[in-house]
Image (cartoon, rainbow, N blue to C red):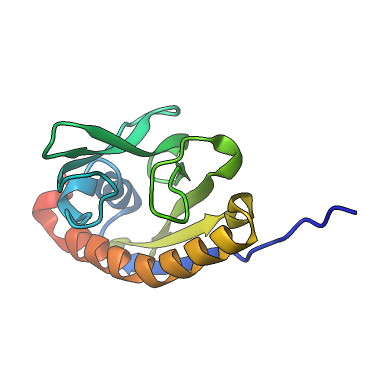
Length: 163
């Protein structure tokens, strides 16, 4: 008998001082302004982080050695509302483009009073990596997303970046 394991998703939320269209733009087009240059999976440091603005687009980082390293692909692109990207990184923090083992990140943008936005992030499908790999990745990202969302929120609050 085959048993299917289930690993709980990681869920994090943050309220940002920006409207949903602005919050979405900072998260996507502005990712290079808030994603840390130290958080890359390439052989050399990150020069630029990019999310291509369409379904099927790449989420990638460009590195000092000139290479692009794909982090994932855009699965859902709904400006000001929702973004879903694959997370094509294995438990050893190496690129792995196989859809069968990719986890997934969904980000929702909901208007809040006062022109603010609630940003809900869910990182899921860790079981695709197998029990040990999935649990390791879940633990790693559970500890990592809060700091990343804090950097994002700080950037979203800067009015000059909200154009």
